[in-house]
Amino acid sequence: MGFSVTFLGTGAATPSLERGLSATITNIDQTLCLFDCGEGTQLQLKKFQIKSSNIQHIFISHLHGDHFFGLVGLLFTFHINHRKNPLHIYGPPPLKEILRIQMEMSVKELSYSTIFHSLNSDHFMEVCEDEKFTVTAFPLQHRLPTYGFLLKEKVRPRKVSHQFIENYHPPYTDIIRIKSGEDYVMPNGQIIPNQEITFLEPQLSFAYCLDTAFYPPLAEMVKNVDLLYHEATFMHDNVELAAEKGHSTTIQAATIAKMASAKRLMLGHISSRYRDLPSFINEARNIFPETDLAEDGMTITLRK
Amino acid sequence: MGFSVTFLGTGAATPSLERGLSATITNIDQTLCLFDCGEGTQLQLKKFQIKSSNIQHIFISHLHGDHFFGLVGLLFTFHINHRKNPLHIYGPPPLKEILRIQMEMSVKELSYSTIFHSLNSDHFMEVCEDEKFTVTAFPLQHRLPTYGFLLKEKVRPRKVSHQFIENYHPPYTDIIRIKSGEDYVMPNGQIIPNQEITFLEPQLSFAYCLDTAFYPPLAEMVKNVDLLYHEATFMHDNVELAAEKGHSTTIQAATIAKMASAKRLMLGHISSRYRDLPSFINEARNIFPETDLAEDGMTITLRK
Image 1 (tube, rainbow over the protein chains, first blue to last red):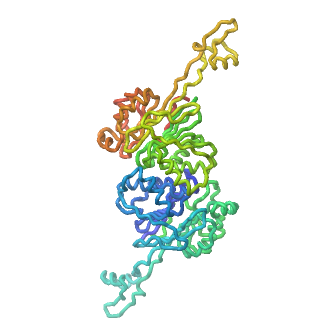
Image 2: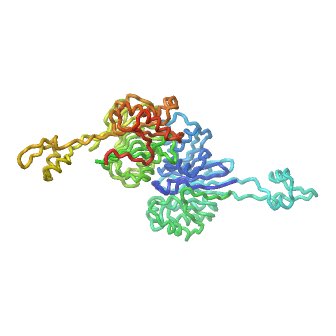
Image 3: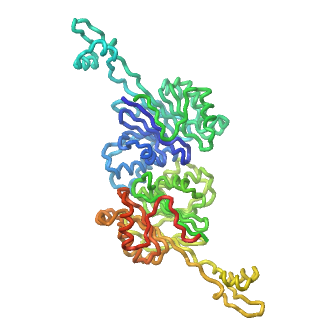
């Protein structure tokens, strides 16, 4: 089962020709989740050739404009394109009315149903259960109520070891039985326990954490995550400005990744003031070497 | 005094990589007016290197999403950029609440003041008077209340004829007097009437007419306009679909231009279904030869 993350917009506050506004998409076996939807997201989806009709869930972290002003346009376009699949939207409670008041003039009735899920918990809480993954929301520390999200694969059926198949050439019907948990009975009656010839694939996970000030409790919530996408609006010489604005620095994002024992860190929501990106990234790598800078259109494949 | 019109977004309904959503900007001596503001307009302004801080007036024709979903993002960006100049916004009454409900979460108080002017007249009515021009709004025929706009230069101070200056070499102080309307008194006492040595520049005008079905009364409202920007969502084989959707065809737009004795017609709001643009434009030129197709980023200069 494939698992990839594509960054659609990696800038902060206002869009530039190089970095669009916040939007990130995950693709788990062709089920797409969109995290935030800044203005211009629908065009980024086209630009990066992502099949937006496969978006099933949209998560809005908070109601600063650069994270959601593109949502109503995307919903409108789904309607124009005659979407039929229901769409789940997760966001702070006022978002529902914000969407309604804008859509009611343009569209009498959408071609698809939307299911709005209000985020208003102050603790770690599962908000979405799909066939293959769950998404948990948790509060971040920003200037208004803001949520981070942890997308985690469910435990998947055990896979049959390639080594076993090569050694024993079992018939297909036996493979089906082994997959369902049975032991393997060899033609001579000898039994090989299921645990010895099957294995569990790791449950991959992705955490989306923007916008937030440096917030150490976050490390516990995303413990051992495979890919942490954490905002780094500023370099660390602006640590006081970052705190004042409810944002993080390179070093703070890297510190969270280190505390969480994340496998990999991507930085985003970068202020347009920064042009010397190697300096930017190196500041974080000094703390957490497995750090990279997200760019619009970049895809990280966790599993093919 | 310069007068130019730049098309920022010339597509219909949903944005494409080739055509953005409706937005057009006029530049009259560095005072900018924006007509409609579809999603992505602020990025188009950057792309085409237009100094958006010079926008003084924004006119929203109607509340279909492809004409106004970019407005709130532009207002937000003005704030981020510490705009100080007041901004006048003209649109259907519900727009005020739509903007408020979205902005209140992001911004406690904007860095600049906005003056909202409700459009709700059912006849031709001046809605904006600037130092150098006026803008008149008038109803169009669409699926919800929609306004067209006519921007017209005011009568300007008479200009002194170059021929007179070359022939008589009058001192600068005399030129100032002539400009203020006085006759010219030659050193020998002979008088040349002001009318003979000055002239009026034409009052240029631009009409913005989207979205609308074929609406013959419009021709009277934009009579003799220098540049008519009229929607042509469809080619004429879709004339019935156009009527059903409240849109116009190539031939209908050209017919309005002809009836109005417009100097020039630009077509926009083109459905993304059309790839054979020469056929599209020729259909209109058969009726009104001075027709062109608007493209994103194209500027028409009426006076340098």
